[in-house]
Amino acid sequence: MSDRPSPVGPGRADSGLFGPGSVTWRIASEPVMWIAGLRAMYLQALHPRVMIGTWQNTALARPDEAWGRFTRTVKFVRVRTFGTTAEVERAGARLRKVHAALRGIDSDGTEFRLDEPELLLWVHCCEIGSYAEIARRSGLPVTAAELDTFVAEQRRSAAVVGLDPAIVPASVAALDVYFDRLRPALRVTPEARQAMRASFTPKMPPAFLPLRLMVPPLNVLGFSTLPPWARRLYGTPGLGLTEPAVSLALRTAFETTTRLPPQVFLVPGAALARRSRKRRESASRLSAARPGRVGA
Image (cartoon, rainbow, N blue to C red; front, side, top):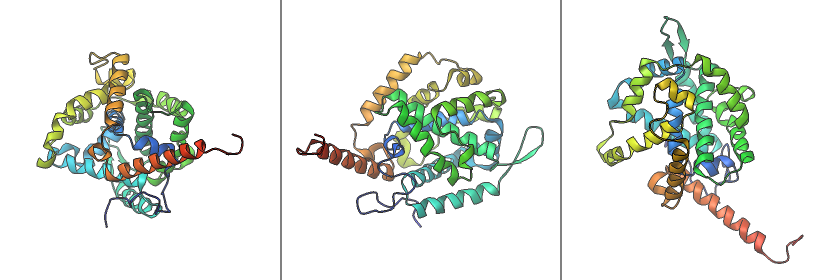
């Protein structure tokens, strides 16, 4: 069975968890969100159990296999965001089954499950918080209220991995409160430092080798968008970039990539969703411009 979501378009009745009218589709269909994914990865690594459990149970410690893990993660996010309800349910069931079987060993010898709600919630909040932050700073046409709607929509994604949506932050302010509460427990483990170094020189299949030229600058930009407290934990508070310079780089990235053909940067589901959204927006503008509308 293919991991590619069903084509998005007028003929598909089931739009899955979100749909063309959602803020999620509007944000996720922009190529600049790849930077948000990198930011989320660096932020997630600051939770010791998340990092240790991931290191012990995945290919992160084996560079030759890390690309495969990355592509599997991309496929899951693609299906979760743009797949039909049935496709999302299948992908979620597979992921929950895998997580339920995995265990990690903490530095003090304590065994823990990788599907503990605390760990799943941290991973979720880092991902969604990063999407919201990059959307805001890169100049995507979304309001503060729409970013809150996006965060609230993503409680559906949290349920897919096994979280109770009731415990998941539903606004940007609630995410900020959550991060403030977790900060005392965060630190950089040796595994996190090794993973960060490896992220700048990933081993890729030959067909993707040209992408290696893009990885270092994108990683620097993604890392630079971390909150100052996170960069301080890594021991690199500024990387020589000011906050205005980082925001300018993000806006440039958004304005440049949004003009490129969707297939250049986007996974297929996102490209289809982007076209569907643009069709809906064009239809809405045409409808608003018609003479004789009630209230005109």
